[in-house]
Length: 101
Ligand SMILES: [Zn+2]
Image (cartoon, rainbow, N blue to C red; front, side):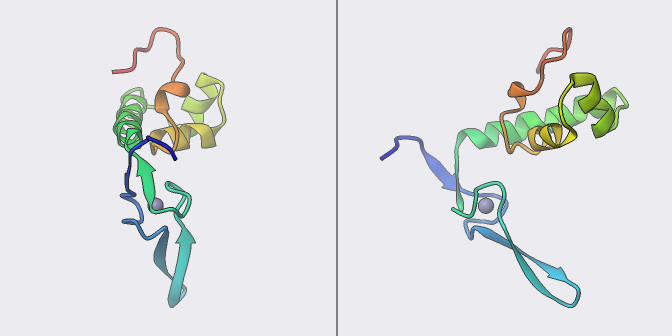
């Protein structure tokens, strides 16, 4: 029993999987955001919002995801996950002189 409040996953709408049209058929992919559970912790919405501002900051600095990750000393995938709110963006944003909004 956890007291962490969970809400419907916005990516798969609580279904746990995302279906896509693929080569004339349907392909159902496991939802990465909620790990197929269809529910996410409420705090993840905050991560998604912060991730969006992280993407905005990167674009303002005119950096590609790869260039930015290199400057930050992290893997591009880690930055990608942060920008999409899969992880807490403040956990990767550690550039001296750059404040998280
Ligand atoms: Zn989901």
